[in-house]
Length: 408
Ligand SMILES: Nc1ncnc2c1ncn2[C@@H]1O[C@H](COP(=O)(O)OP(=O)(O)OP(=O)(O)O)[C@@H](O)[C@H]1O
Ligand SMILES: [Mg+2]
Ligand SMILES: [Zn+2]
Image 1 (cartoon, protein in one colour):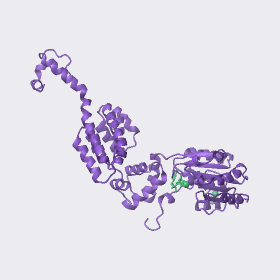
Image 2 (cartoon, rainbow, N blue to C red):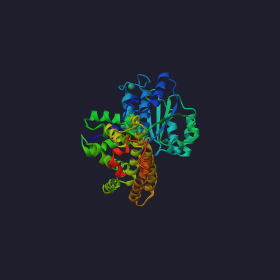
Image 3 (spheres, protein in one colour):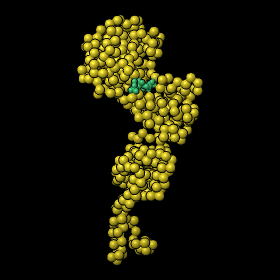
Image 4 (cartoon, protein in one colour):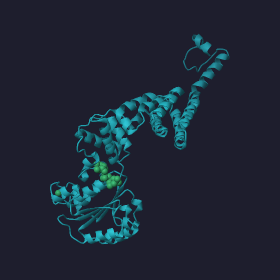
């Protein structure tokens, strides 16, 4: 895979709508339209970056123009099916809205529209980044959108639908592409790795998918990076490094330190974060997420099921937070949330975090108020004459435990 290496995002671009991951609401509706033959003449694909808008536009063009008939499953053999993915079909015209955004550009486009398609059913104009068109260009386009010839279809793609005039929006069928859920991204990456012979753990794939934040392209580019730095069998630790993630161990050191009122452990963790050059802000926000998860575990052990964490981590969280009062975790969360906002603005974020630890460790005795009151009551009873102590929690008589007497 060293020579002639093709970026994963390009090599694995889906060729048909059905191969796309995570946009089933779009493919279903388009599939129904294709099957019924009731096709709108202009479509708008909008949504975040790298979620499949351009991919879907090309795949839909293929579906529309396959010689075997318009279908979600184009034949893959005919001229349009072969040409469209390569960008060589004379009947599918891709226009970059960013660089062809003038009135003249749209007029040229309108001139071309009058001619019938060469070989295929439709003449399809894909205008990418359509929000970049000038006001005049939009106006020129509007005329065409009002009465397009029956052999013409428009597919617009944009990340910024809010920049498109209402007059245009009202004449297109709009599809909102969603961010792709992490498990769906991870699964797609797994299939790709299998096909490419890359040996990588599920945990690593999940980390990559999480870092990709719902963008398939970003996730695939991160996978490229992992492979080019870590080789064909990248270890989890390498993935952590490459993605610039905070080492989970340091997060757990911090969490356990905070919950156990172990200030030195927390301060050591912060020092390590600092020395390793991680951003304190990033560390704090990952810590916040971990505390949130821990709080859920403390509330209900079954909450772990809803967590997007690998099995080992769920177990660890269970051990760390399982028996703790949910109250303590909620308080820890609140302190951290406040700190998180401060850290982002602070010129010396490390100090802010250290002071938060001091605060957390200082407020911790509040947790033990219940048992403390009990012990005081016990003590009081014994001081009153070691007599009847009906509510002693341990169920022993006072005289049984001379050591206890001394401890008081
Ligand atoms: N839903 C998806 N299923 C499978 N692969 C996808 C999906 N979305 C994106 N990809 C992958 O990411 C690459 C980029 O996708 P695409 O160009 O379609 O994104 P886009 O939404 O048009 O992004 P942009 O807004 O940046 O133009 C594709 O080549 C493909 O490999
Ligand atoms: Mg695009
Ligand atoms: Zn075909």
